[in-house]
Image (cartoon, rainbow, N blue to C red):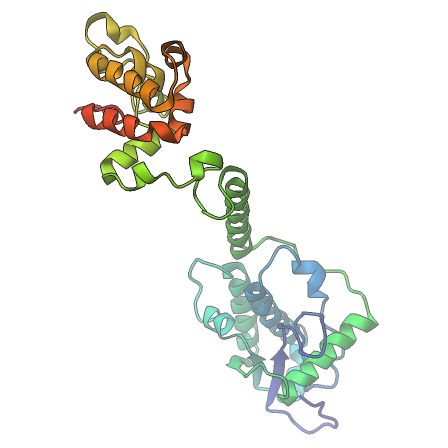
Length: 325
């Protein structure tokens, strides 16, 4: 835009909003260029106002609001020049669409301020119009607005007079980024580098027996292996059962907590299958009977030679399944 000199009447005032990064400078901020020569005050420094608290979308709306607010503050000068329309040009279509309604959502607080300023201008016989303009380098108005914004930043330091607030869009982005970072941290700590959601070490290596078995059996195998099988202790821990007692045992066996150790060694319902399991484990691994009696269940699942034996045990029993209804 260009300044108008002399007392000739002006029918409209055009205001350029520049709040996206300029291709010629590293600073990002809104700029306003006025056609009325008495409007020489630089724009408030929005960087201190919104850095870390607002999104670019909010900054676009805020710049439009500042333009209209300054118009209201100088309404007498506008009327003296015969201005009947204040036109704000912005390169943000999203911000312009937001100014057409007051519905709840991102930017509602800023849109309310824009609406109030537009009503104040209308009360003095001046209409407010917001127009879209391409925000590319080489557009004369955008170039001048960018120059004015940089000049205001370099020449003077301003104190923000508006109450700082955090926009809903900014909070949503921070929450999303926090979740993404937490997920990446968990995967880096718990999962193998090359296999995404797969446990480290032998637990994350390809096991031919489970991977070539029926899906229902492989599911139970990996649930038991990772400690997420629907046994009594697991279901009670997450509030799906009132107790952790084994529902397979009969008689006095119901007093025992249903853990992996219980299901693979002590559950009376699967006594015959347990004997066959540990006999086959000793044959497959070369372990003696004493070793089989004291081996940890986690070691049983981490030993690849035992995979077929464990799969046969699961096929012969209902260990690892949800309780019957």
